[in-house]
Length: 89
Image (cartoon, rainbow, N blue to C red; front, side, top):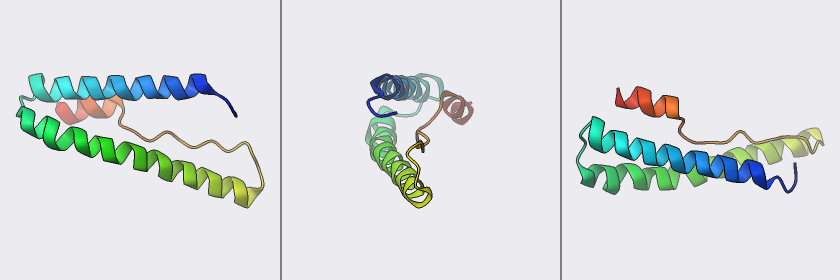
């Protein structure tokens, strides 16, 4: 839906919260060194999340163009809390 800022900010805060939870789990539960978490994991997330979301948006745009519809929605790309927990434990 054009102008759906509630969905954007809801997704944004969800992703930020998941990054904070993942950082805490990696540092304090799994006991990974801080230089690995802050030097490798978080920068990789910072690169993967925007590119993944842009790719899914492009796929949705392409499908909408092919089917001549304006009701196509891109699936949000990102890590989920369930994935974070299964990776850590």
